[in-house]
Image (tube, rainbow, N blue to C red; front, side, top):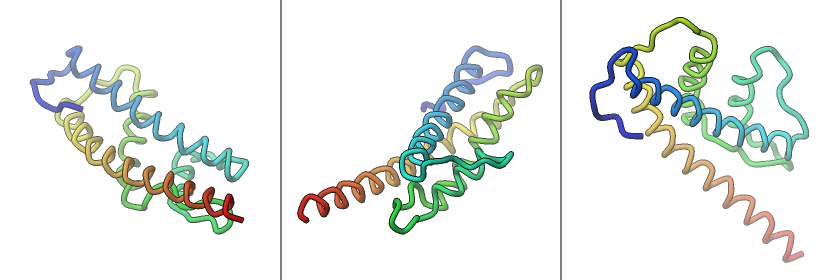
Length: 135
C-alpha cells in the first residue's frame, strides 16, 4: 500500500486508505476463520472472538494443525483489528491522517509477516500431504 502523498482529514484518499486497511485485515481474518473451521471444526465463541481467533492462530495444535501465524504477526494484526472495529463503529468520528499513515506503514510490515507465515503454513501442509501419500 503506497503511503506517499498528502492525506487530509475528510479527503477521498484518506477514506480509500481506511477502507483498504479494513479490507486487508478482514481478508486475513477470513483466512484464519476458514482454517479454524476446517481444522478445528469451530471458532472461538466468547465475546472477544476476533481477538481469540488471532491468539488461537499462533498455537500449534498437535495432531490438528501447525500454527498459522507467529506471535509477532498477531501483535502486528491486533492494531489493524482495532482499527477495523473503530472504522465499523465510529460513525461520526473523523479519521486522523497521521494515525492512518502509521497504520498503513504497519500494514506493509504485517503483510510481509503474514506472507511468510502463510507460506510456512502451506509448506507444512504440503509436507504432511506428501508424507501421507508415501504411506
